[in-house]
Length: 225
Image (cartoon, rainbow, N blue to C red):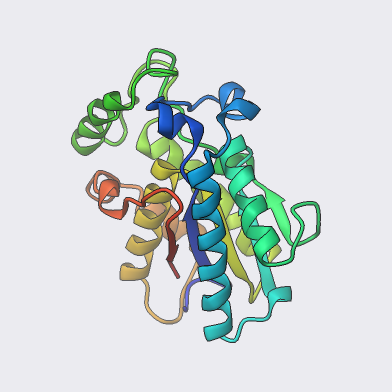
């Protein structure tokens, strides 16, 4: 573990109604709408992810009271977190769950919003060329998202210690999160060091442009640290 005070798992939300419709829903305003929560297949995926996570906690001898669920405020992620919490016999209203606005979906910009999923490839091609470039005026670059995810990690690390943290978020943010955490892990010795400085140091083009390598399917759970 070394450089982090907690252990981390990431979970991409289950298949959502926007996924089924092939729509990009990335603004906070649309993202929180009830009509964009999980599709029935996504509820099943979240249930399975919760069961898998419970199994991993048992295998690692992690008691449930050491678990914290940190999730995005979008309806599809809140819905996923709720299903997982119920599998674990927890409530999202309780002290073990916390909403972080900075875990929200990456905002792709006004001309991508509510458009077809097919437009993602345009954005990812741009990311590979220049992760500091916004998809358009108002949209977020990979580096923008990396900055707010760095804030989340530093907040979680300062608030919790020795916990199993489940981060429930979205495709692009979770790819970017894994990219920066893995880059820090490769650069840091077992003694750790200043996490804020290490996270800042990996916010470079060569690292951030590779975020698609850490893609997750809907409802996919992955241990990160």
